[in-house]
Amino acid sequence: MRVLIRQLSWFIAVGCAAAATHWATVVACVEILRMPPLGANVVGWLVAFCVSFSGHYRLTFRHQASAWHVAARRFFCISAAGFLVNEAAYAWLLRRTVLRYDVLLALILIGIAVLTFLFSRFWAFRRSTAT
Image (cartoon, rainbow, N blue to C red; front, side, top):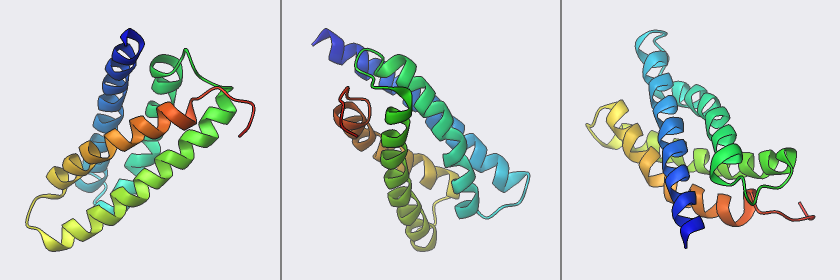
């Protein structure tokens, strides 16, 4: 139980850092570079992926981590799947609601976090010989 609590704590810390990076990158791309929110969301995800993988590999799942290249490939699959859900929900909500793009993005990032933890814990960073 202690390991799970420590793991959840690191997951939340790393996830918050990655989500903040994602959100800040999107806002900077929209406000400074005048990119459309959906395009900026792609850039934000790519930058945040680096923060997320590094933090989770070195901190959250360090005691169970497989080789970094195996974990990176698996985590990229999870992250990309989460991003596809993120982008689809974001596109739909941008058209269907009057909420600001940055508020919508924050809500979506929070919603994807739980699924990312579960898939990361039980697949991406799990030590195994099979890929």
